[in-house]
Image (cartoon, rainbow, N blue to C red; front, side, top):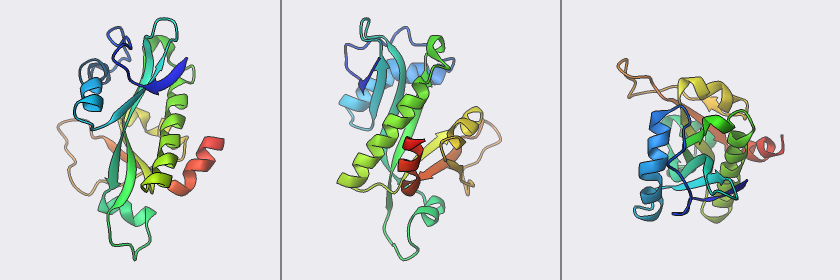
Length: 173
């Protein structure tokens, strides 16, 4: 298995994570968001022989919202607080529960460390589906109360944060 940025030759069409949203993102949007729009980078774990995508994580530069900012920056800091955002993390059903998600999450945290050293990064953010909250909590992420934007119509994503000071400890654990 290799973890690397998504390449055009990576086989994505057979990917099935159990989430139609995540599957469609990988097949229809990941490449153009990475190479045409420069909105995010998708890192994939691929089978070295077939180049089939086994799992992926998408990351982008972000900034902490004001309700998160107070947890990760000094009160005297007046600017926006840079962060790395995990947009999607999914593993093909055939390879779930084998540590691929954890490997990709660790890779994303390493990207955050590089971002911190090169342009600033005070935290890693994720908006987790409710079923994934406990997964992220195992790695030190904490939920953040939603101030606005909650809706009873569709399942609410749960904002979570891992402050920079905890990234190294999470990677070593």
